[in-house]
Each structure stands twice: as structure tokens, then as C-alpha cells.
Image (cartoon, rainbow, N blue to C red; front, side):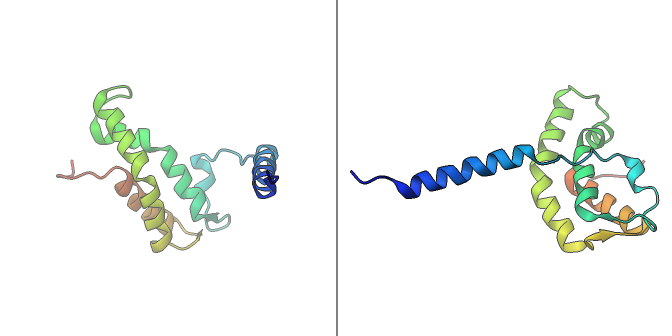
Length: 124
């Protein structure tokens, strides 16, 4: 029987990648204060989109009017998380990679929120 050199090499490379990924520095969590002064401290679009995805439970609480833990709220969060990939792609196509103004941040945020947690009906 021939020694499976290719398989051993691929498994070794995968193991090295996993170990490397675990030793990398993890980015600091972003909070809303990061987006206060975008003109002097611009941010990457991906940082804004990542932060907005973490806000899905709060968006669902507002959209449904139900607190966390209810069936309606849980379903909304589940659907929002499922939409996150397609919403990210849509934001990549529509907005610049660097968010350097409040207007772009506002438009990106509103568009992403409507994509993650679509609402219909009249405005209150």
C-alpha cells in the first residue's frame, strides 16, 4: 500500500492553519462611540456592517414590540441572522469601502437595518 503523502500534507496544513488562527489577535469589540467623528477618524464599511449585525436583537425588539425571549422576537432574530450574508453583499455593492461621513454612515445603517429586519406598514 502506498503512503498517502497528499492526504498527510493537506491535513498538516489544515492543522497549522487552525493553530495559526487561534493565536492571532482578536479585534476589539466595536461600540457606537467608534462612529462619533467619522470625518477625522473614518472607518471601514465592514466594521460598520459587523456592528450592525450584532444589533439585530435590538432591531427586532423595536420592530416586533416584543421583549427578547418571545417567539416573535426569536423568529425575527433568526431571520435577521439568516439574511446577514446577502445583506453584507448588497452593502458591499452599494457603499464605499471607507465610511468617512455621517451621511454615508446614516445611509449605510438605515439600508442595512431595513435589509436585516424589513418592516412594512405605516410610520408611527
